[in-house]
Image 1 (spheres, helix red, strand yellow):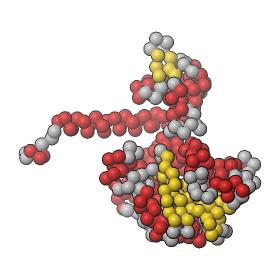
Image 2 (image 1 turned 180 degrees about the horizontal axis):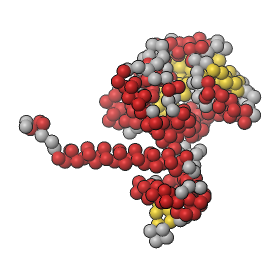
Image 3 (image 1 turned 120 degrees about the vertical axis):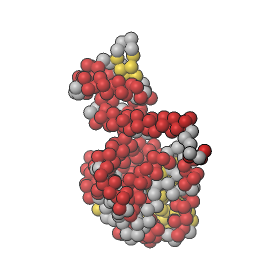
Image 4 (image 1 turned 90 degrees about the vertical axis):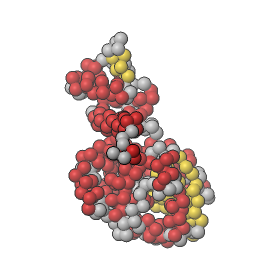
Amino acid sequence: MSAENQVNHEKLMGLFGNVFNDVQGAVGILMSYLGDQTGVYKAMDKLGSSSVSDIAEEANVDARYLQEWLASNAARGYVNFDEDTNEFSLSPEQAAVFARENEPTCIQGLMQGVVGQFIKEDVAIDVFKTGRGRPWGEHHDCCFCGTERFFRPAYASHLLDEWIPALEGVEDRLKEGAKIADIGCGLGTSSILMAEEYPNSTIHAFDFHGPSIEEAKKRAEEKGLTNLEFFVSDAADIPKNNYDLACIFDAWHDMGDPVGIASGIKDVLSDNGTFMVVEPMALDGMANNIANNPASGMMYGFGTLVCVPASRAQNNGLGLGPQAGPSKLMELLTESGFGKVNLAAETTNNLVLQARA
């Protein structure tokens, strides 16, 4: 065997250790999902340090299974175990990650989205082998709900306090009263936030997925919002309504023809209108992302399973993916006909771009 083909034992064991940790993490995702869906984490957050039987009673789950689950979580550092009292607990930090839905660090939505991919793994394999597209409607419901749950805390933390204020000449217009188009609104999180914050403005929210729109309508009705309307519509069919602000949140890269969509959006804006594009955090260039973006492995994975197949299921099927990076995004916006394009803001998980005619 040539020297170049000989296995370096130290490198082999390092790689094996990394992959083994990934496998443990995959099991940890399933354990976290169980605890989320059965309410165990929330029960633990409510009770404080407690015995297995007390937690089982509060969460209404089987105590023997719970004991095994708690041991798995403790081994991963997801919960704490006190050997002296034989009790389990959540620290404030653990609760913020696993139990408290509105914390920006709550990761349960992301876990739910990953579980949704395991549920329909046969479809993912078929798509990967054949190269066909996979519309969002072919995904398990966990993918829709998990995505919304993951994005919701970030939108609540950043949209009104950082992203919109970073847009030149926009915030004051929204306060005075403007017309907003939220395109690809999903379950309506971003639309509802803007409707609540800017009661003098009118928000029209669009999504091609009918069930998501129905759920969004229910949520808006529960809040008594009268300045928000939802419509089932493809992004290419937004009416010309002189919108002062058009937004796409974490969805532009999923579209088959992002240039065509952006060009159409330019035509529905008022003369001084702004197109805000919020995209996942990414650096310029694949090598740069791989080396320097800690989330790139996960995001390229979601690109493989969700984003690129969604794009390829549509007309043109560009397959931009969630890690295009700011330079590529600005290039496409310029190609769409916008004369003024800039990176307005960056937060941990997102890039925010502003495009104007």
